Length: 148
Image (tube, rainbow, N blue to C red; front, side, top):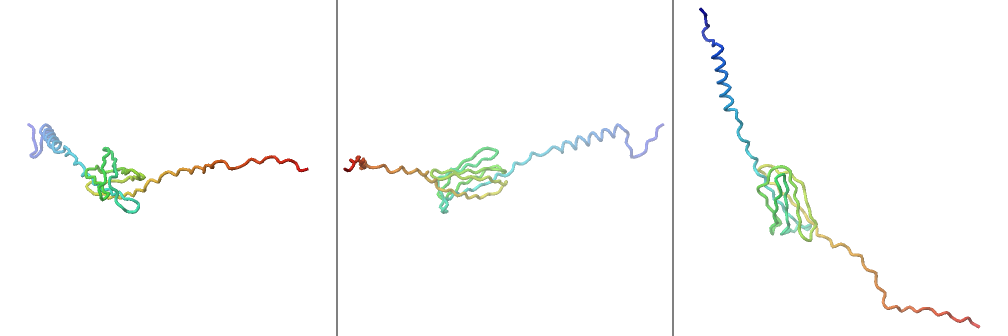
């Protein structure tokens, strides 16, 4: 006759209990989907060197997700509201003005304000043409006869 102590389990019931605990524990251990980061906002103001807002400038923002473009309004402002957080490059162009650009870092759920100043294109200097001589008014000296 075998004697069992009260409160102890045999090997088979103990193995079954461990298997059940592992199964229940692993079912709850599945990772929840990672939430996507909140988009970043970027407000770019484009100004002339004098401080005057420049309307109609093209503003391009390049991120790892691609490039977005906008034109500035009458206040010189271009708004971007759905950009991924992280590194970005901002490029601004406007006919008659030198382009400008800047590398920035966008933060999730935050607004970044950026002001870029453009300088007018200077017309390339053209060398002045030498003055053209008018009709020739020089005379060719004649040999003189020796004096006697």
